[in-house]
Length: 118
Image 1 (cartoon, rainbow, N blue to C red):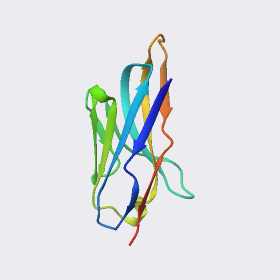
Image 2: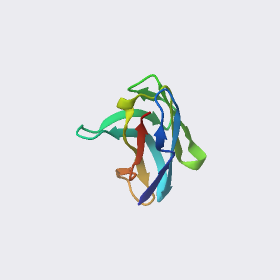
Image 3: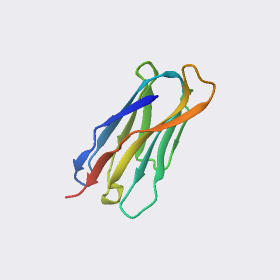
């Protein structure tokens, strides 16, 4: 299986920045994509940003930048100009193939809380 360890969340003032990290480990044969999602209280989970193994990115918000270190199976989310409405639990998702398997899998991290407040 794949384990995801997220870090970098916390409390930040409006207008501030945070950088989230998510490191994947385990039976990884190849990674197709890694993504960040968020879920605010009372709202559905939404995609924040995704990056494929080839480096193709897609964002829901131009204030955020996703990047990855393929050698470390780690994905980062740089968040700038944060607003109170960005407050949510941010979760990392890994998609790819495990050693010894031809099936594609998705794994989720436990999430890290981001709170934007003065």
